Length: 595
Image (cartoon, rainbow, N blue to C red):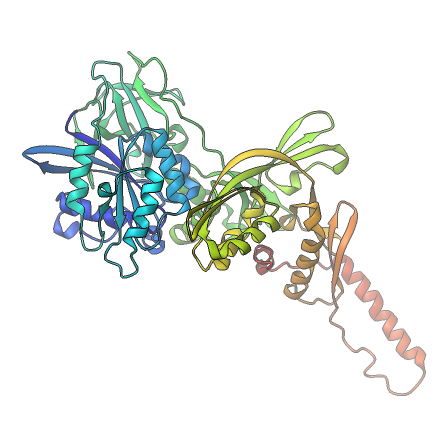
């Protein structure tokens, strides 16, 4: 146990943690020459392309230091705000953390929130200044920031570069000397924390765990506490680049268990594994079911592909247990699924994976959040979809989720950032100058307001400098209304949105104008209306294509022309009753990009 070190890497997106992990694996000879490639741990094509870690990984390295062999378990964490629960479980499985900060960009919002998670778990923090080989690096300024944030001595900050391999030996030395070994009791009942799971189509689900107390042996009869399910440990082992089976694993070890589990719902991140015969007294604290924050409908473009979409969603859920979905049908789009995502990046990734891995062509409806509706009968309904909202006369009040958002930016952009947040109904809570030209602002704002295009706007007004991090804080009463879009007096449910009363009028007018441009002209007038309940608040008309039926009349009596026009008028009227309006797919996407 004294020779095991468990550590994770925390950093903001694009601060070079995957590259630094590559150098650590190279230095400890964990990989052979032909296995070496950039971003070894990011094995999904999408991860490499975007340069982000979506799925966390774990790998064991062996390192000889001063004549002793040490086992270093690197438990990698995803860097994005959507996956903060997974990050918290990975951190709970470690005793130390490498805090990696880009020498050219300095400290960012995500770094701070993950650092606080690490400090809550009493982890030993080793600060690393990465990308020292860049010309734009400002080591002295960034070191000042790190000293203020972590409160460490200046000489403890390691200068490193993931690209050139500078400082890697010092990092390994500090991990061994500063990170404490795990303190647990080998004789106590088994207590292991699940921090990740991966699906394998041949052997079912591999659960990754860290043993806090006790020993697990191959063939043991074990129980997963939160789900209450019992299994035989068919195979256990340690995590190298490939899985390496072992006969037994002891306290402090990080490993995997395969027990032929076929459904992802049965393995939950944060759950506790213990023996059936001699269970531990209580489960490891901190477990919670991951709750989706953003909801959207996903429908196949071709209605015949519904079954294929269902199969794709099932396979995708095996690899990503935080995706939740349920079937729903829409008058405009046919059969599809209502999906819950952890956040906007998560939603984007799921869409991308459906397209790449399963060749599914899908329409995604307007993303929204879940609201709590209190009725006049004192019932509480949870609404994920605007069409599920009861009539206004049954509603007592509606509560919407609020978030606390932290934005770190250069001080020159603080004015536009404040304006953006206030436009989105935000309330300024705090403003702190981290250095003379870097400022951190904290806002409280509705989650629904950041779902659309907040992040894109924030990046563009701050020239890409601002970093943004948020967590859900509470539910608050809001004056929301359901805005419906009617085509020829028929409601298109896929375009309905729940929106704040003050924004409804402008939003309704913009949607109507946009749809007028997108909907093709028919042989009859098409009325596009935005309505709140029975009240129409905006209208545009797509004029009919008309044939000049009087062209063949020359001279003669006016009644001849009148007769032809009356006949045309009747035909148009009949056509309006039977004609239906095709809503092009661009219309659904246009609502997302109204500005």
